[in-house]
Length: 130
Image: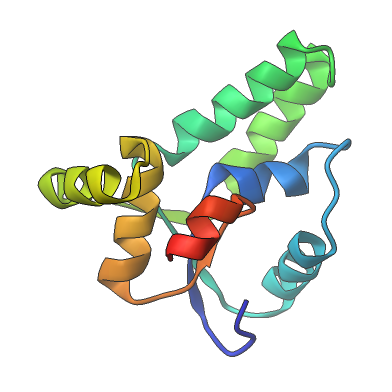
């Protein structure tokens, strides 16, 4: 993660590592501490909120968190300013096919490449591509 950038593409793995109490990452915590102090623009495709809420719901189903905590995390997430961007689905499909990714994952890779900004993810495969 480059320290002098003011814009990042962010995916659900990164945000969920910040929100979910049983997931910890020093890099994620450092980034969110920085976010409190600096004007940073977070960017994601339109599927991002669905993926985050799905991750929260999955944590409830697996009994990692309570329904009450899930509601609080959802509210906290909705207060986070993330600029949602459209993607070119034909280009996303091309990336998905060439890199053996899901369309969902390829949409994040596409945004990072198209906007030429760093990609915040904990997915090792996506990190190696972007």
